[in-house]
Length: 387
Ligand code: KIV
Ligand code: ZN
Image (cartoon, rainbow, N blue to C red):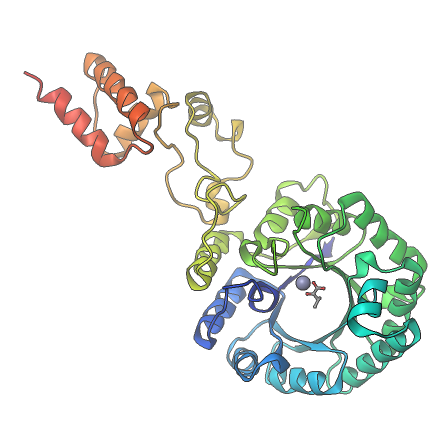
């Protein structure tokens, strides 16, 4: 079974989400938690982008152990120098990640450069980074919209120049799963030296397909996924780490060939830490880490879960470190759940008292969005103290 390398870019691409800025102390706290979670690579920042980013990457590299620390660089020497200096102290290994756009639209309008010039810059920058570290990753930015023949040429050239990981970004979240999977397979078939590098994927979520695209790529031969906690990132965000990891673990039948070494019980805690420090609230219905991800309100579902959890739960909440209550009382809830919740609160009622309390509860739940423990206690007290 192959290892699926989890490359976390919460502190680089994730932090590029408008409004998600983190200070140095916060970045170090998140980096430490990412190590506890078990990620393989932390992309700690873009050292040339600001003195603060340089310092944060450098502090993470000096203090956070047991993981590869990566710094991003454009295909220019001053960026690569900065990425090298910032990541140099990393004891678990330092990686330089060089990127350069290869799609027609980026080459013509953004870079104003022709294919041959791009090919030369890509190759030279990888060779330059290679003087500093063995571990060099190259990203042809906007790869999913790049002419495939040109993409294959660029990949072959950068691997020849020493790139050990080649990342295939879906920079603008334009790809859809079948197409992106086919692109990864064609890279395997058409790039003669591809066996010398790890294929990585980096998907954005503009069409809500970042996780689906990443998973399809893993099925098609990618062995590194770039992702962020809670899926934060530019615009609609990046592929969400917790969703990818739990999909691979939950659907072993579809992913028998890979394993991700993530301590999944740390997922919920990591999600909440990133949410607290970035100020980005996790939507209640967010897969895996939303407040409602393991909660059941309707009577039919609650009854099923009380009889056998797997009737309505495909993941055990404790496997991702979720410890809250799973039975939420509302207007759709049934009497069994009501009784069970009372028992959890240490209140035993039965017979007519229970029937009447449940009727009152239903009346209240029709009027109120949330029925809290205090409401239940007062319902029962009213019933018991009835003249
Ligand atoms: O989305 C993208 O293309 C990137 C690259 C820098 C890898 O973030
Ligand atoms: Zn990105």
